[in-house]
Length: 326
Image 1 (spheres, rainbow, N blue to C red):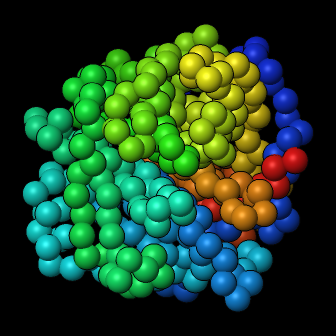
Image 2: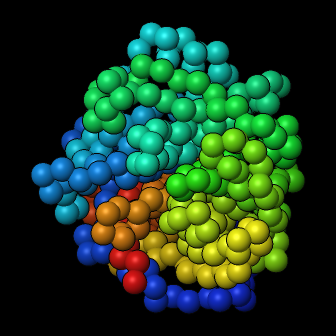
């Protein structure tokens, strides 16, 4: 879900030197003629043979597995079996927004937004299963909606095309981040985070982000049961929240994301960062989901790019950024 961006000055714990963009990034989410489209979710699943593997989801109903070595990637689109296809065909739009691999339980969660008059019946968190319970297999064979005990309260502020773009899972908790509150084409200055017990699915805490200046949440990552990282798309910020035992906020820290165009660190553009994940070496990855009505660099920037990069922007190919978290 992308809308016009309002920029504000940030006043709480602002730093600019904790995330270092890795050389060779960003890169296009493209493998020859194959590319992702409107990529809104990413999750790290492991490393094999010096390659790092991720699952990504597109908000047009596609899931891909990506292998990454240095800054070279390969893309494999995952198939859905007939029962999964039939389940998803009931949706007005297969609006996948976030995907999370829970390495503790070998479970994969998918956040789907609702669209149309019956959006409430669609919006939610879904569990998907790969063939043979193997995240490296080529087929998804099962999907079902996760039943939260307090779902009516949790989903109260979802609306058409507004759902939980933030989703993270720790050892015993599930964290949900509402994309934001919207009036017309504008988002207001705060949103909500929900903390849920992973086993009982009971709501533990609902927190407003107003006092810490988070306007939107489009990605979450759980470091542990009391620490999360996240993305505020509309302010182009990475944030860290540490909770007390009762899930009041103990500490908040924000970092402005460095978002240049490929192959030129001096040129910036309005990126729509939609998700984040961390690998086994504490590297942070974020993906750009270009909104096809707005997110293209201005002509003055496009003229300075290599032809391939210019055409990729014009064709709305998503980007992958990689940072070292110091």
